[in-house]
Length: 234
Image 1 (cartoon, helix red, strand yellow):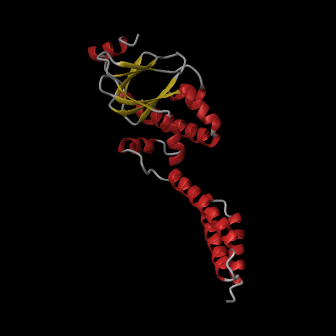
Image 2 (spheres, one colour; image 1 turned 90 degrees about the horizontal axis):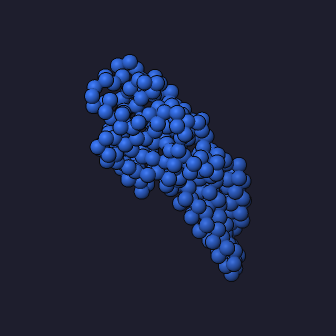
Image 3 (tube, helix red, strand yellow; image 1 turned 30 degrees about the vertical axis):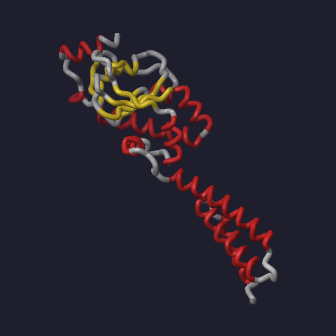
């Protein structure tokens, strides 16, 4: 059977694969090319080239395993509903990058009746927080504000590696996520692309917060409850 042209088709696909920068497409083209070689090795020679066929099948198996890893890195499969909701806040990160950040996350619920202190103004930054559900109290230079869910806390201290700029207190029942700042910086150093994406996202969140969260109408009136909440943090 005159199927010599299969070799050229397989080689052409390999050349195209090596010219593609997207790893998913590259791996798919390699798998297709290898299958074409397998067909040639099985049909054309007599007897079939079993050593070449077995070697090629092993290469296909390895590429399928890598393809599975790539697909897992690019999807939100196996994330819980809360984790998918949190992923929406990390808009500059890929699913794979988010999973690495998620491994360091501590999901918490404020249980102190007097409020749980997240940050203190002008003190070293040791953690980054995300308000998942509820509204917290924030004080900066003597002014008090409400900060709703879907906001980060301590991002200025984290990004600039300097003392925090606000005192923030989470009332009882507020759900939030906490990351150790040192561990998160180590992760960013290990994966520079992740670190750049994370800093870009936190900078964007800060810009949004300055534009919308600290408007005059968001200032908290000096009610006995709000004063008591912040005095508990002192």
